[in-house]
Structure formats: structure tokens, C-alpha cells
Image (cartoon, rainbow, N blue to C red; front, side):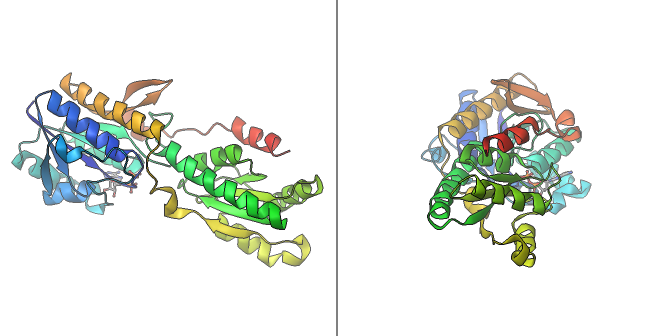
Length: 323
Ligand code: ADP
């Protein structure tokens, strides 16, 4: 092999740059040329590729986001779009692609691999909803950002004896909400995986107040049926009966943009290096992720066919710890 490409796709995650850097430098170490594709699958279809040297990826390990840019590209979900991408790769003499991204991006990676292109995926999404990696690039940093917000809200909530609701990201997955709720000491956690009755949330907050707590913090996942908007509206509608309001903070994209912490830099570096190692060994059609503390490959066919389960025992733990 002489030339590979690397791209970042879908939602950006802190640590993506560390993964790009690792792919480029370990690829160069193999004696290959490494090209960067700009703006994910959109750039692949448009042939927006640039050669990357060791210096081009200097000074990026500590930066959030992705220096290559990312995009959502509906065209890549069509066979015609992917055929165009294959043509661009052939025109640039690129023999394999490393695809850094989450669920959707790895579905795209699988589709490309099915069409005969050697592909290795790198598990990267703050949502932590990707099968094949117990934790993905960006999750740890996103959790830290959520915790900083929760800790601050707790201070003001305690000063005013108020109830606060904080919505975190995660799409259809409650991982970020559950973990930040546990680590932030929330009084209630609302996630898509568990049907939640707003009356129970209200009762939990009232009970916490009666037990002498000075604050009431509810962490909700954006994908929950009662997310920030739904829950706040319910509390407003039943304000007189429930007796209190919920002040809403939606973290949104603030959660994505942080500088990657040590864990994400190291995970991204190890996964990026593993991706080129697998390609050097002629192995592709796989995703590299962290499983039981080790960097392991999982076939992309398995990744797209499975959903990562959330450990529901932790939901129970969150309730007990809210005591
Ligand atoms: P993430 O990788 O963060 O989950 P998305 O779900 O937005 O992000 O997916 C990123 C991109 O991956 C999409 O815009 C699309 O180009 C591509 N993609 C998603 N699903 C598929 C699919 N089933 N087949 C081919 N490409 C896909």
C-alpha cells in the first residue's frame, strides 16, 4: 500500500484531531502517503482531498473539533453518491480510508466497505451509542463539560432553593445524562431508555426538598420523551398544583466544543494508531474501539447490526445515590 486517506464525519467530538494526527503519523511511519478528506463524505464525493505531512498535524492534539471539518451528507446514503466517492478515491490513487465518526458515519463506512473499498472505522462520538467500543472518543470530555455546568447550577440552586433542569446531548442514548447525573449528584435523571412520568420527577424533587436538600437538579437527555422542553412545559402547565417551576439550561453544542482531556487524547491516539496497524496487516471492514480496556476490532457488519445497551442497573444506582 502506498496511499491512504483519513476523514472525520458526523457530529464532531473532542479528540478527533488527536485521532487524525495518529493516523497521519503512524501512516507516514509505514512509509505511506496520508491524505486528508475535508468535510467528511461531502468532501469525498467532491474530491476535496489534501496531502498531509507530519507538520500539518502539529499543534492539533489539544484542539477540540476537527481540523478536517465534518459534515452530514445525505448523498452518501445513495449508491450513486458512494460510487462517486469511489471514483474520487481511484482518481487520487487512494487504496484505503480511515473513517473517524459515530453511528451514522460507521454505517457509511460499512456501505463503502461493502462496495469493495478497504475501510477501517475509528469509534468517535460524544453520544457513546456506538456498538464495538465501550467508550468512544469525546465522551469523557463531554462528560466533564456537563459536570462543570451541573456543579455551577448546584451552587446557584442551593443559594435560592430552586429546582434546575439541565439538558445534555446524546441523541437517542441516555448515557451522557445518566453518567453526568450520577457524577454530578443529580436528584433525578430522565433518559430515553426509561419511560418517565413527570409526576414522579416532581415527587422526587419535593421529597428531596423535604429531606432537607437545598437544591433540586434534574438531568435530562435530549432524546427523552420528556426532554427539557417537554418537562418544563409540563411543570409550567401544572405549576399551581406542583408548587414550583424548573429553570432550564440546555447545554447543546457547548458540550461538544471543549478541548480534549487526557483520556480522549490517549484513546484517540491509540485508536488512530490501531487503524493504520490493521490496514498494514491487510485487515479492514472493521471498527477499532475500546473493549474491556483493550483496543479491539469489531466487524463493521456487526457494528451496524447491533445497538449498544445502556446498563440499566446504573439507573437504579442514580436513584439510590440521590437519597
Ligand atoms: P454520526 O456519525 O455522528 O452518528 P450522522 O448520523 O449524522 O453522524 O452520520 C454522518 C453521515 O454518515 C451522514 O450524513 C451520511 O453521509 C452518512 N451515513 C449515515 N447513515 C448512512 C447509511 N446508512 N449509509 C451510508 N451513509 C450513511
